[in-house]
Structures are given as C-alpha cells and as structure tokens.
Length: 110
Length: 115
Image (cartoon, rainbow over all chains, first blue to last red; front, side, top):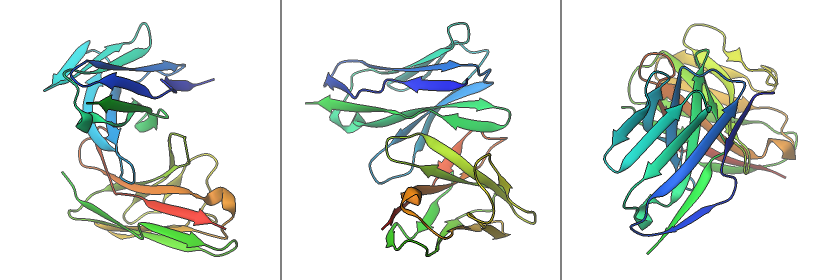
C-alpha cells in the first residue's frame, strides 16, 4: 500500500541547534516533494519544493534533501529559533496531485 | 502569491444540518482545491473545483455530501451536508498559482464541530 510517514512524535530541540525532520514514502514515484509549515489555527504555508532530479535545495536557514533511492526527504532548520516551532508537513507531487504526510510537530526551546 | 479569505473560521453545528464554507481569493485562479484535515491526520483532498465545470471528487467523497460551487475565478463554496460527528474536522481551501500543483496557497481553514 502507499504510505507517507513523518516522525509521529514531536521533536523537541534547544534553540540554536539544527532540527532534522524526516519524510519517508513507499509505493509512490513523486515528481517533486514539498515542505509546508502549519501553525495552530492556520492553513499550511509553502516553504520549499525539490524535484526528483535534485539532491538538495536551500533557502536561508532551511535545507531539504531528496533521495529517490531511499524514498526519503530530510528537512533541516539550522540555528533554530523558538519562532520555528510549528508543525511541518511534507507533500508528494504525483500525477498532478499533492499527497500530504501527517506532519511533525517541532518545538524549539529557548 | 495569493491571499485567501475563508469563512466561517469556526462553527459548531447540530447533527443533520448543513454548513456552507466560503473561499474568496484576491486574484483569478483556474484551480481551487478543498481539503479536509481531521485531528492528527494529514490533509486529504476532497475535490478540485474548476470554474465553468463540475468539481472533480476524490475517492471516498461524493457530490451529494460535499456539493461545491465555483461561480467565477475568485470564489468557491463547499457545503458539508447532513452532518454527523464524523464530519468534525478542519476544512481548507487552497489555490495553485503556478504550473500544476507545484505551490499551494491555503486559507486559514474552517474548524467544524458537529454535535
């Protein structure tokens, strides 16, 4: 069956450290993968897109990797801040549709 | 980018009633999407609404339960009909401003509770 799995448990880290979130998938062949941020009571906000032929993408303190062999994407936030605390969703782009993971809650403590 | 206004932001409804959710975009868009986000679950696509044609529903969602209107390129409504407690969820509209589904903008969502 098709699955998208993100860290089910909340990730708690100290301010200034690097947060690493994982997105694994099975039985999908995505053309691209996206990461979104969602704050409580708000809709998701687009952060980054990485295509199947790209290994890594960066945007300011954010870095995304995409390994189509491992069927995995890693999302890194360097020099994390309490304001980075939110739920982060990965989404696979396949067949013209976006399929979302359930999200990982990140909490950055000062 | 797009600014999406969605209302109501939340509502508490009685079993058996219907609720219509409105989604207004500040620019013209071809495709609008309606998602459902149940507690602790991922976003699930309900349907795609294109102006001038019938909405396309995903597996598990039917028009009688979730009728959608798309009267113009900036507006859409989703109705949740004959509600039951299982319909309690967050409903989100979104739009695609680029090619395909490459970048979605979301409204703030409607938190629906059915008693």
